[in-house]
Amino acid sequence: MKNRPIVLFIAALLMGATACTAQPEVNPQNEKKNPHYSHTDKAPVKVSNAEWKKILIPEAYSIMRLKGTERAGTGPYVHNPKSGTYYCAACGNALFSSATKFDSHTGWPSFFQSLPGNSVAKVKDADGFRDEIECARCGGHLGHVFDDGPKPTGLRYCMNGYALMFEEGK
Image 1 (tube, rainbow, N blue to C red):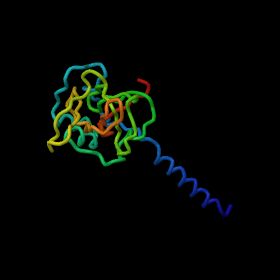
Image 2: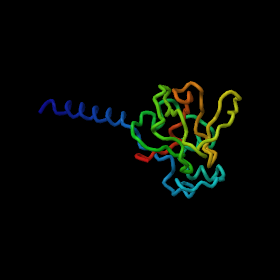
Image 3: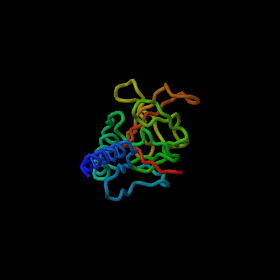
Image 4: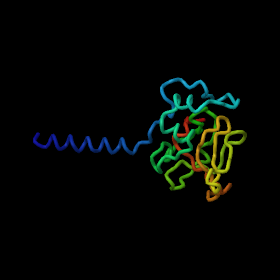
């Protein structure tokens, strides 16, 4: 019984380490219901940044409305092995299939192709060199696209995890 505190301490450390390596479950929206989030509505969403600030958590707002970037390896979905669909965290527009996701070793979720149709829009970044990717429905900043990806497209859509929502099996 003398070693019991040490055994409990080691068990607590192991449980903490396991919790740290688990894929985070993130909801980029605040607890308030988002009236603009829909997987079926394809109408453009025109909402002020002030309204988005009330709906999105700070990380998602900074990325999607202020064109920020999460630090490599800190956002959700980098190592998500599940099959499903990735949606815009702000409006619910379908963006990417897990079938096109690959490990780019960059620290951000990466895809070699977006979903067909009106899922993403490519615009010149403010720096004039990169191509920014926005949600085609709400205009939210998602990340950038580069031409160093795998076949068949040769593209790497480097997305911010906080700009995405994932639903398994779709």
